[in-house]
Length: 191
Figure 1 (cartoon, rainbow, N blue to C red):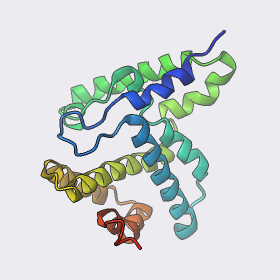
Figure 2 (figure 1 turned 90 degrees about the horizontal axis):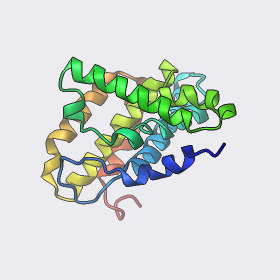
Figure 3 (figure 1 turned 135 degrees about the vertical axis):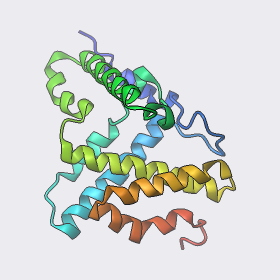
């Protein structure tokens, strides 16, 4: 049996994000997933090293790498639509689950059970950190767009910031206090 799973995953780079917004630079799902993995890993390390957690930071990064893999099948649905009302949100979750099952079916049978929990986001504690990293990545994109003079992202920056504050995660709050300012700085200011 030939497996098409990894060929599909490589197509994440063809799925644009922020389709309803005017962007000064484009972002695709593959780029976004990489940044979410970097941020989720950092949040796990912060939890473990500063707040005494015991998460496997590598496993958190893997979950983050695949957190939007179902968009290979569904495309990237804009957040205002995805969360417009409970019915759409519930229906979209069902579509995501079906897409995850389809991706899993593209793997050789002996690999499927290893990928199932990752593609379905089954670990709730890891899922919560990946969700925080996902929102953090969106907020960083907003800050970068604002830094480039694109006021189209002003409201999104406010909304993502408020969502991050509402998550009430100590490791996220620590990251916001110690690392976020850098994303608003120029390269020269970072030195």
